[in-house]
Length: 402
Length: 215
Image (cartoon, rainbow over all chains, first blue to last red):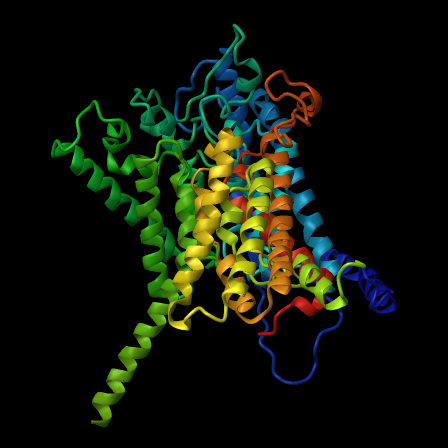
């Protein structure tokens, strides 16, 4: 008897047991279940929920690995062990094992906590509710370590994940029923609950918090943070594009995010409409701000000057904008469903991100709040798109019959 | 409850759980969000509402037969306003600091939907004794939720209870803070109060399935 049929026998024998959903979640991960339907016509599609989720995770893996290197690089750079790298994306100072292991040992626990706590709660709820385990957490679990600062205490992450999964998702009925993006709910919770660990100039580089106040103190201000204080930015444009800048773990490299986004579009999982329209929205808002500065409406003494005068396309490279747009605004559950709705939704995400970023320096990560806000409005947008379509067709019908 | 008949006891006990003004009738949410960041404020608010609603119900019940129904809302408002001013003045006289902390919210008891709700739904149709029990019961039901929410928000948000540092000193890093624990700033914001009330509603309804509404 093959292992596959043995497992199936095991499942049949234990039918109705409370823990069975937990078993079959792991089982179906590895094998196609034996209980397939044999009669009638069925559509067979290869892209089930698990495969879809795995594709998204695959698209994020480069960001994760880059994040590990970058965590070490920023750390070593800040304490003065190495020189700032030269020679483009494959610069020798960046891709060293020294850098990698610093990041690896910091980021691996984040991944383990994120998946451990999140999936634990999913299993628990599946057992209580008596339904199969939903795969919805697979992507969220990968997103979470990528959007937090590298030095975040693990217990905070665990609390936030528990909150995000229960309040953000399970109370609405689980995967596919949630209103807000769970990963962003988790980040928003962290941001409002423990602001000292989620913003400022101490949290973005590994080691900065524990060295604060000592002679060895190091600082790692993000670009958005410097701009908000009207400071000069020392990073070059190429650094921003390649991602050799301080920031949350996996969101710094616009290049790799772009590749991940193209992969998602190619696999027909991410919506190119949302990504494109969101970039358009950001560009329009950026241009408006640039125009405001050029027209002399505000002067250099204004506290908005630093961010408003940022060249419009730089906004796409700095902060978490690219990551949020590609991996989180496109979440098929919380985004708009209709094609026209996606354009509106994406455009507003981009537009509002830059607006929050500029006008509220205390919340530099506008993209998080913008996506959460638009998540709430996505069903409304869809409603009006559908109603508009109905109206148009009714008119056509009337014209025909009249 | 030897003092009360079974029916009267029900008037007090029902609003505490199965007919709770906040979690079941979903009234008075605004003040539950606004003042529950500290346990002390929740307790003072509870006492104030017990006073206003208990006495108000009696007054309305006594004059229920002579109020012209066209202007009854205005009469009710006058009664609440008078009682709220008494509470406000007493607080100002004996606990000025606290009255400053609660600020406008004591005055805003007037707009607490539970109060007008009980006047309309109960006091206008029942005798003064029953109305008194109903008023106290509903105010207590409201207060229980306020105190539960206030307890969790103050404990997790500021690490204190009634101002005492029960979890240790966050600045000197003693007690629980020595292990790296930190206060949850989100607890002090209004959205978290809403979520805590939501969790109470969730727990209550999952324990008593009869409370779940049909759709």
